[in-house]
Image (cartoon, rainbow, N blue to C red):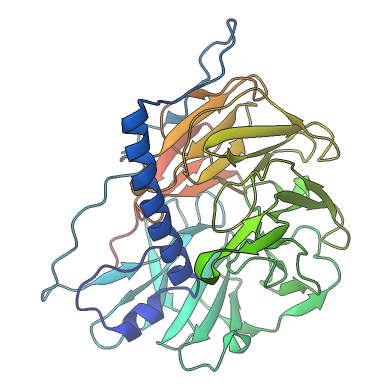
Length: 419
């Protein structure tokens, strides 16, 4: 999440708009930008370029397609900072989709205070409606759609003593009415409930799932035993629960924590029991959180993708994570953040770099990771499965969302013009 760049916006308004993890994410991005500057200079000096493993019989992997709707740049170049003036300032949050027709986001207009509101569409963006969020004006809010008309809002007032005072509200009628929800502590997450990837991750706060019909919230009684872990929410529910993280840490200069080791864990019984696989090469998709990026559709054929000393590395399992084999495909990605997904047509899509500052690259493999070929930059490497298809947001470099019925052809949904 980016830090807001609206000059003159007071601190209370910023706190009201941002979820509690934005500052952490912003610091991580600034750190990546500094690293990327050094990496870019090194490439210029050495003359290094992108190296890919080639096979003589390998054809070009298919690129993502785009629908007939307006399709802006997937990761646009950041524009200038808006100049404050008498015009109203409407701030919108990350979109969240219940399905391809029902998309929601939080927003606020800071003119007479900063009341927090939601906006939603029931017809894929042709019409939008809006209403008030049942939270204090100074709250930090994380709004999620877990079903076509089911929403949950995690919120914490800026006057609260600590995060233990956070609360949940739910709506099962598309935001018209809301109720307060008490989180249930459970030994296993109920089947069919939507698991939320949140920050801080499951190392700090145990996994949470939400009933897509009622909005009830359940949380595992135990946290992940991995460190700096992240929940993988780009895989279908049938694939099981996947968590990616690190296995150790050392203290660097100035007391800075440096994560070590790399592993994934999978649970096929709602989080009651877990099986871990540790990779031997420190595989990581990010220096900040998580281990490798996990890509799977059925929970049996699984890819773990990351980088090792600046080189893209792919591991593949065909038995649900019991045994893993390193594939031949590789590329020079520097210190870029990695995202990966397995498309419905069997193509592995890898994105290296998630913001304009990282100068993103996109790769595709149609031969089980043996060859990674550069392809057109576009959505598909970080999708969220929803009823009827997939959604991938353009956040934070663009404010809308990409929608797809097949995971291959995508259309763009503009954020609404709010009243």
